[in-house]
Structure formats: structure tokens, C-alpha cells
Length: 175
Image (cartoon, rainbow, N blue to C red; front, side):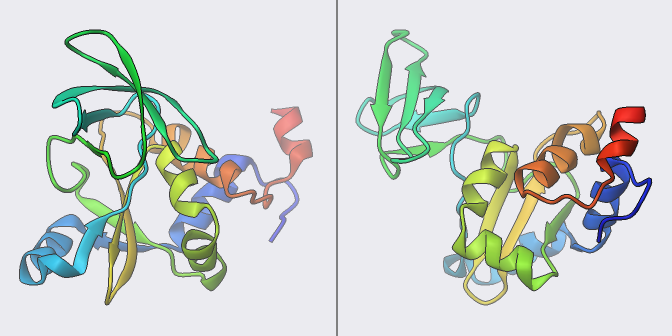
């Protein structure tokens, strides 16, 4: 897929065009129809807000252990930092689904495999995506933000984290 003269942004744009785009309202209706078939599988990332069950308190994730998936959460009230295992906290968001009006799913089988079998959910979470799984329809992801360049903030970091190298490094050096 390497194309002479293609910048990393052009490569990321080409990759994203291959995704299946779905209106968030459509996902919302599907979730309403069969709520037990859907779940958010986003892993907490540094900077995310979380509610810690044992502490009955909210705080911010300040550190993550990528091997154990434990999160260090600085509690709002006390300022104390606690290490918490997955399942012992939940991420806090303003809405059940991301604010942006579109969600995506991978179309390419290699991307789907990477997400399902590799560390794709962890990587996408670190890149700021919210990831959902439907037993019937697979994985969907969205962006919970607005008002800036999504390619610079989300798509290019994901392209890099995914390990894709469709761009021409010589073009990047010349730019």
C-alpha cells in the first residue's frame, strides 16, 4: 500500500475512508432494541474520569499498567492515589455514546483481527477512542470530542499505533 510521495496524513485519510461509517443515532436505536447485546469495552486511559466502587468516589486516571491493565486513580476528594483492577471501576462519560454524530467499524479483515485478537481495544482506548461491542454486529468506535482536527488528534496517532506504514518516510522528512 506504500505510495511514493504520500504523507502520513494522506495515508491515514486513505485508511479511514475504508472504514464503515454509521450514524450514532442508528447505534443508539440498536442499543435500545437489545441493550443486553451491547457493551462498552473501552479501557481507561490516562486523563479519563472514573468512579472507583470500593472508594465510592470519582477521580482521574493518572497512570496505567499495560500488562495488568490496572489503573492508578487520583481521587477527587482526598487527592489519594489508588491502584484499581479492571472491573473495580467504571469510566465516567457525559453520555452513553460519544458526542460526535458518527461511529465507525473496521471493514478490512486485518484491522478487525487486530482489534479482536490483538491489543487493539487497549491501543484504541489509549488513542482516545470509545469502543463498543455488539454480540451480533461486532465492534464500533467513536470520538467523544469536537472542535479540532481529528486527523492530528485521533486518526494519525491510531495509524501509527496500528503500525501501518503506507506513507513515504522521505516525504515526511522533506515536509
